[in-house]
Length: 300
Image (tube, rainbow, N blue to C red; front, side, top):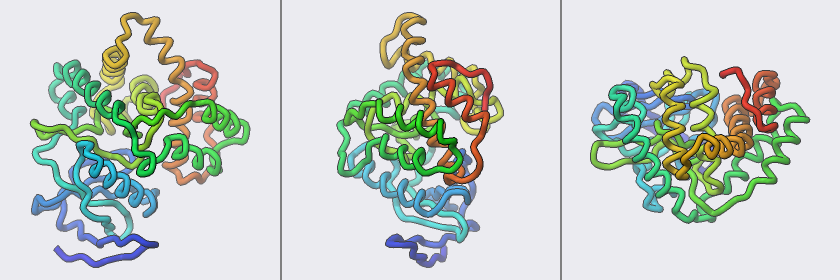
């Protein structure tokens, strides 16, 4: 396998030839490729993402790995000449929890309970605030600077962000049951680019969102599961994590969660488009409903 170095800023990317790889996965932000020699896995962000996104994920992943949190070892920054990403330790054999559940539906409850235990272990880990950012600091510049947000919504989002506490608790940043993989012996967290610290509600906000508001074709593509299964997963998860016994307890928690959902929704929306483009009336309507403590009807 032949490669050469490309320098961007202070970072060196090694150019890879995708003829040496086989595509092995597809997500909302990146594609993954397994080296044919079985030595590593490359994750390349979509063209709409820049080198800085790959650098941040790689740097954060190194800090997470060094902290002893179970995750694949980062190896090097790579590019195919158009996209940027990182190469990581290959976990083999490997299946995500969502893939297992899609193939073995009876595993939904036991894997959700196991996922809760892993999430609790992560959230009980005190964060190194020198190595990782406050989640609010990750989200704030996207809300402040993106042009695809109207000014009234921007103010509402920033005021809400300011009202949220920041306990020094480790967060995955993109926590969902597809971002835990297993080789049958050990479990590993993946997709760590938004790893941070703060309220666990940041982690739970998007699990709730995908189980209630994401269109079926998107849940199938991203998680290999339908919305009904993801909704059941959410209820099992939140009751196991917090010990809720009644629907009323769960609904009260979900209502408080909606402000986190609005902020994470717009953070992901702005980041996906690089903060460019026109505001989306559908997205704005959904975010305002969440900020008002209401559940919108349309899926995205």
